[in-house]
Image (cartoon, rainbow, N blue to C red; front, side, top):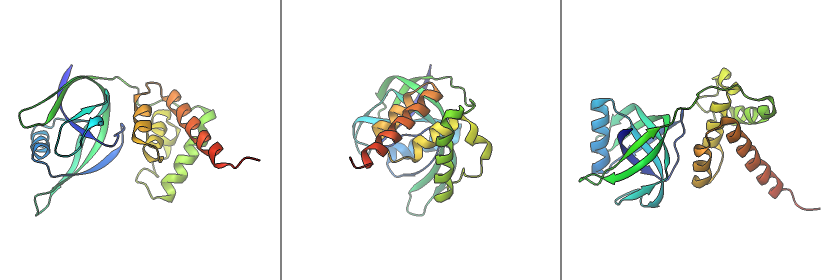
Length: 198
């Protein structure tokens, strides 16, 4: 078990994902300073109830560790950071520190980070490649990763226009092939809805 500071958000961070954040609340400025000093990671979790800014929030059970990979303090005191999603975790208990920062006891989830993409999901990999090239995404040149079922599933979960709860459901799936199947089902449902009857 590990005790970490938590950053409840209205978005989902996936392992391997890159997320830029603007930090302005005192409790989170303190948290980032602490993490930069110690090298500690913090947990990003989707909010299940409560507010992202100025209040307390309850989190979904599955979240992702975030490692700070870049930071810059602006003249106006705003802190800009870039984090990378690392390992998934299960939140066992959540509480609030005296400075109103959420922290949690978590259990890390041991995931394989590489599994060969099954041939029946090659179209999903092709779709991800097209999206990456169209929008000039940073990972478009990572050619070998487009054959990795784990990576393709996480990157599609990030870039597809899904509701936060749908993204959370994809994060919570343990088997990478099952995640790809869920994504395929969602795409097929949307495609079917867009085809007019008759």
